[in-house]
Image 1 (tube, helix red, strand yellow):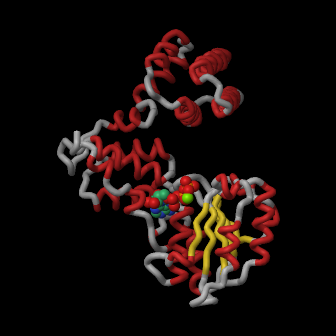
Image 2 (cartoon, helix red, strand yellow):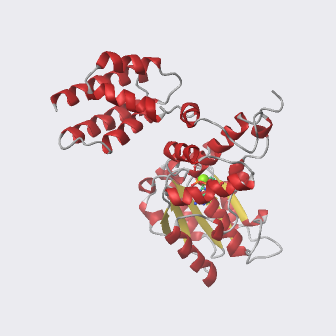
Length: 332
Ligand SMILES: Nc1ncnc2c1ncn2[C@@H]1O[C@H](COP(=O)(O)OP(=O)(O)OP(=O)(O)O)[C@@H](O)[C@H]1O
Ligand SMILES: [Mg+2]
């Protein structure tokens, strides 16, 4: 037991392999090129990094600061990192104001960075307060806002910042990153495992690295440097249906066999309902179904997925979804 979970207690690989410099960031090519230009010209605007989780926003912010300051580790008095904590959301911004306006005794020209994560979770009234702080801030202080949805940031902040969008890592970028981690950790991983990890995490590199570390940790009792996992295990521990099961489920739907479909669904354990919708969606998109059937199905997937975000009962929604799916397929 002790040994089995040793790896889970060691440093998380997402931290161990977090890029330190802009050159280490994979993909996001246009963004990285522009940021390198800023570093070269020794001038920076305020920035917004927007995009989905695990695509490199925090890593890029830290790498940019390291490169800009020519350091390996950002000095503590140069950076204030905050997220949309209760304190910030309630508009208690004293710590930020002190950091921005305090001149310091030793070096008044010190470059300082306020890195604000989850900026899209900050209420608009508090965002307005930030607008004033940005306006009054001395030129040696730069703001980096990070968010998943740039639409939730107010215009006055958007117009004062350069906006960079981050995208889910494409397969090529994922391969470079994950393979170099596997190599460094001296583990052999088969292509089918990488395929499974990419399918599940679809470009979220944090989730991908965590999943790899988890698989390795669970197999530490076995030959450490050769991960013999059946890829189905990777799908199952992530709450996804392995391809064979998914194909069978879809086959039953296409043959309009609701009883068998329900049987399969009811036998599934510990799976993610939203993940299941995503898997069915990818099946539909790669199928030979045509307009208007395909479009009707995509519409109901969107509806049912939305209902799950509203905390509807997953079992009832899934039964309803498959009933709906089969009746649409039956009319085709
Ligand atoms: N583009 C990338 N290049 C190299 N590594 C990456 C990249 N994106 C993510 N990673 C890896 O994933 C981990 C998490 O990335 P990071 O914290 O930068 O994501 P994020 O975009 O800030 O996500 P969130 O929106 O959840 O805060 C990093 O430590 C790094 O190991
Ligand atoms: Mg982040």
